[in-house]
Length: 263
Image 1 (cartoon, helix red, strand yellow):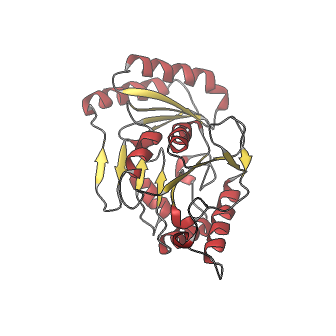
Image 2 (cartoon, helix red, strand yellow):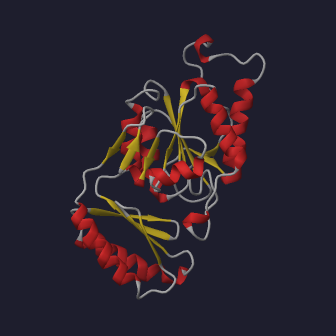
Image 3 (tube, helix red, strand yellow):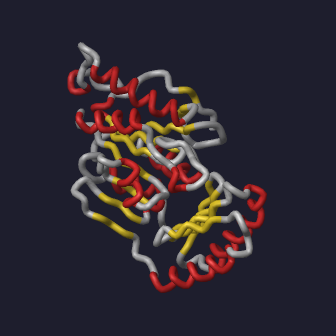
């Protein structure tokens, strides 16, 4: 789909924001544990909360890792591509999984990965990520390995390619469906969804948010279902700050006072 650069600010008081983390709020690093969210971005998200604008993070990371990256903020969150979800009241929801099967798969994967120096296996508890960023020449072998596991364990896992990673995520986990679920609940219910992401893992989210009449933003280059584009992680931070500046400007008109049909 042809995308366009964002040219007009959104009305924060009408919107609900769903934000990916790696590659969107934070630059991708050689190893997942090195990732951090820049302070200006954290301050922008905090200010959105102060204004009463609902913000959630939707990521392949586990919720406990998201809390660490966003500290001291604690947001509604969807982790492991929607396999786990936390609402505004703190209630946690998890996909029902076969824990014994996952334990067997972990043992098999650990043994298989020993044959590929430079390949890092990340166990997310309910999913597995095969990172080859430090050995990009392994991409064909890692793809074959991940496809084999996804095929043999199709009743438990599904394959999710990403940037220098192949993830084996729980069957049924989807960023799109978890956004749909969150939009049915306060404080997101009745608002216009806005989803910002950068990777193949975010395409399901773009599809659902477009279906719901929202705004979708792809960070960086590449084919996408998203209808708008932001150039980089730095551009995302600047965009959030600009939205806040417009909302806080003297004379800014609340959406409650606008005529119907304006945005």
